[in-house]
Image (cartoon, rainbow, N blue to C red; front, top):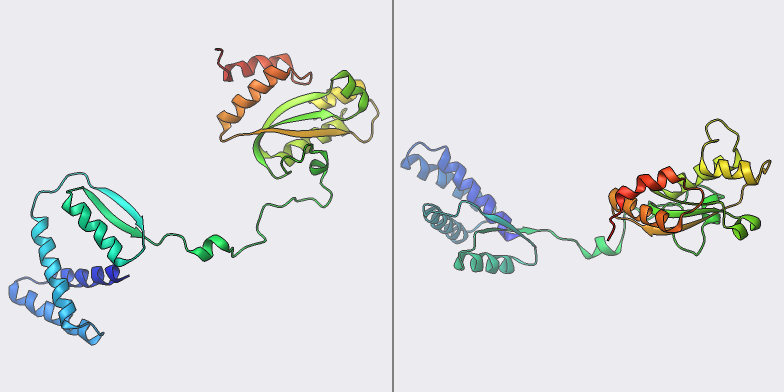
Length: 256
């Protein structure tokens, strides 16, 4: 933009002034800058206009200014538009420093330099995707509250084998933990897990567990996720959520 070029030229004159010890040296330094810029295609009329604007700004800088100046960032549309906004701010004595930013280009919005870098399922045969019900969500979703349940008919009829939980990780990671504990319920590392207890009691010897998964709500933060989980657990009272857990979660809820 033209404004960037003008700022560069002004800074060149400021540097020439700062390295000069007296008025004679300043004139000599400015003359050297003039010759350099003219050799690079800048006309003397343009340079005089910029130097005049520089001197006007120096006179204005001697006037008292507000101690606090906010920065107003605006997307770059044109030099004329930016100049009009700056003039309006000065005329209204608004203590802002107007800065134009490049903004987003249309090609950046409509295209991607890495189209294959989207979140994809890490498995060829995804157990989590197969277990998901209702067509809501995918295995790579994170920061949510979910409902997992045993898919055997007798358990569904007796409304047992149900668990409500939350996870900030991809739901695939959390669901596979439930699946492994159901598949190996007697393992030392799994025996105290909710679905390990359920399969030891109701499906002893089962080689292939049958679990279902439903995403209930998505959350915006850890606290928001904990609050949603607490409300759902206290409402549903799923049998695999133990009483100690339900008491602990009451601190995330507020009684009206």
